[in-house]
Image 1 (tube, one colour):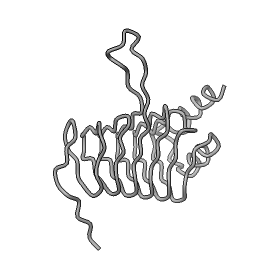
Image 2 (cartoon, one colour):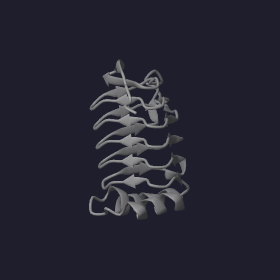
Image 3 (spheres, one colour):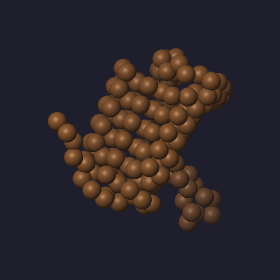
Image 4 (cartoon, helix red, strand yellow):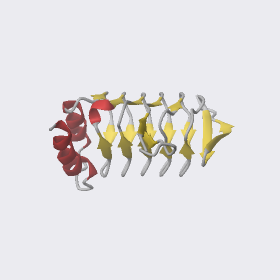
Length: 164
């Protein structure tokens, strides 16, 4: 029943591009069991599966048309940015099995991580503090702190230097 109710709330209030009210979305996520910090911005067109697996810390930005596929735990640290069309995918299938079994693994994006537009983060990825996944890239393994990753599969291309 909970999944069915969430389906309709997600379609009406999140995926619907006509709802710009981020505060309402945050309250609805909390109502369905998400842990959501302060200053979180959720833009229109976002698709979230099973919010009871989602944890969002303070001052995160979730851009238009982001898809968070929470089949298990997804954690966003403080000041994480998910740019337009980014996808966080916690599930995959065992292509070696004749049953094509579903495999789920958590995703953790630590403080200051930026996932670029149309980039994909796969199951089991831990993106360490202030790492960046560039536009259209695919992360299928961990990302080290303060490094910029690019490509498919994403590889470290340069260090991220932060201004003071």
